[in-house]
Length: 445
Image (cartoon, rainbow, N blue to C red; front, side, top):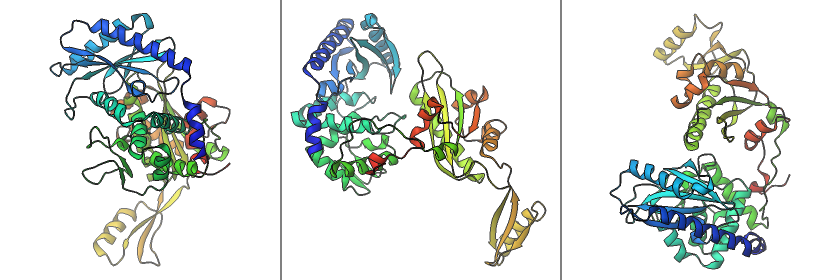
């Protein structure tokens, strides 16, 4: 695959980038090391992540892991690691970010540095998600050859450019470690692309004890019970397979494509927007996605065909997060009347119950030519906006919106049908829902 061979040189860090990263990493490790010196319950600090494994791209973070003794409580690990992070990075404007544990992030000469706590556990005795990272670094340092490291970089850039990189809830796509596992397992990016292009439902990459729940499983070689694909949405697994077919056919889309929202789909989109209280991003994203799924179900029950739905959370610096729930509908309005189908008239008991329930409240009840009872019903809402406003106000408790978001919704929300192409912020938030991903699908537009 010529495209992959040419891409290796394009994504490799330059000599200047390597020197800058090495300098920032050495300084970060030294700063943290000085801060933890003399603390008997801390085994040490070490570099991890893509930098330590040699698979980093320009602009990548540097991870410094602070290794705590297993006797330390989780509460103390969180509080003390935060103090260590702020003290060690005090000259570099530190702030708190959230993953499985809070961690401290700072910036040293343009490179983000993450000070992350973990436990010094033995393999398999995990107490936090970060505990595996040190073993990942050790494993990949042995498993990856120099060319395979370049292949990992190409795969990361390919996924970044096509919206498939990042295992956080906002993306539900592939982590950097998953990229490393794919290349290490197959021996090269070419082999990984060929295998993924021919993937079948239920295929397992690596060793698993039994069937996995994901369409494609990527097993962690450090923790064989862990399926890395659990963090990936089924849609994104499908997009990866389609993208690999396109790459095998000669395409190598390493630059981000500009989304081209369809005007008709924008007109058919209904949005709900509100501000949320400041909380860890993973919490808000998870609740927003659950809310979108619940409200999509309410719309379907109300007679509105939902083609696609999704959620977006914007996090402007110094401002409250803004949640956007979007629903691409077959139509934003529905007929006043609908027909409900009941049981066969030979089913005496159920036919009687259907008739009893509908004769008085329906303007028309009859037996159809297929022997089933039918009743005309008046829809409560003939527009999707009316249904959503009702669900988010009078019926909020029964709407399916997670309890953690209801207080935010009660503080105020806006429902709107149709999205103007000139509203760039809103279009940007929903562009994935109203654009065709032609490159990943192997098509041309």
